Length: 400
Image 1 (tube, rainbow, N blue to C red):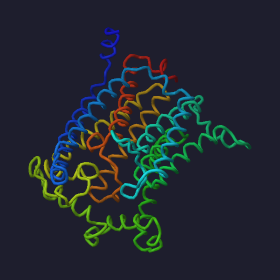
Image 2: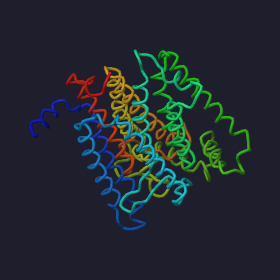
Image 3: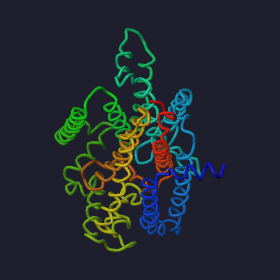
C-alpha cells in the first residue's frame, strides 16, 4: 500500500499544489493580521481566527491530497449526484427558512463547531453535475442534449435542466447574489464549452452578455422603482460603485475605506500589521476586504503577488482541461477554473470598485471553513485529473 501511494506521488501536480500552499499560508498570516486588533477590543482573544483558519488550511491540505489520490469514478455515479442534489436542496431550504439572516441573507447553517454555507457546496456540485451531464450527451463530438430535451414530451433531459435551475433559484432567494453570480457563470461557461459554438462566438456571447448586464446596472441609478422594495439595497450597492464618495456615510462607506487602504499602502505597503483601515473602518477585513488589508500592509506589490498566484492556478486548471483526452475531465476543469476565476473577480472587483460588494471571499486567502474546504476538494479533483493525464490513464478512468 505504501509503495502504491509513493508511486502515485510521482504524478502529484506540484505546479498546482505549491501555489495553493503559498496562498493558504499567506491567508493564515493575513487573517491574523486583519482580525486580531478588533478581536482584542471585543473578546481579548486575538488568536481566535488565526487558530480556526490554520485548522481549515490543515483540513484543506489533507482533503487536497486525499482527493488527488482516490479513485475518481464515484464522481460520476448518477445515484450519488441525484442524492447530492436532494441533500443540497434541503440545506438551501433550511438555510432560507429556518435560520437567522446574516448581513441580510439566510445563507448559513450554524453547527456550533463550524458554519456551513450551502451555496458554496453548490458551486462544486454544479461543476460535477454538468460535467457528467455534458459528457454523457456528447456523441461523436456533437451536442445532443438540447435536441433530446425538446422532444414533445417531458424528458429526463428537461428534468435535469430543472434540477439546475431550481438550485440557482434557491441560491438567489437566500438572497446570495454573489453565490448566484458565480454559479450562473459556471453554468454559462460550461454550456458554451459544450455547445456547438466556436470559441470566437462563445467569447462574443460572454462579452456582449457582460456589456448588457453592465448597461442594465448602470441604468439603475436613474430609477427609484426598487427603493421601497426588498431589493432596494441592491440599487444602493450599485449607486455606491458609480459614485462611492457621494454615499461615503452610507452605502459607499465600505468602498471608500477600501480605497483609503489601497492608497495608504502605496507600492510596498505600511508593513505587516500596520493597517489603519482594519481598525474598525473596514467591515469584515479578514473576509470580503482582505485584499484591501494586503494592499495596505504589503503594498500593491504584495497584492499583485497574490493575484499572480491565483492567476497561475486558474490558467493551469484550464490548461489541464485543454490537454484532456476525456470530455468529462475537460468540462470538469473548465468548471473549476471558472469557479475560482469568477470568485476572484467578484472579490477583487468589490474591493476596488469595479463591482458592487457581494460578500464573496478571496479564494484560499479569506477566512472561512466552507470556502476553504470546497475549494481544496475541487483542487484535489483537478490534481487527480492531472495525475491520470501523466499516467496515460485518463480515458480509461474518466471515459472518452
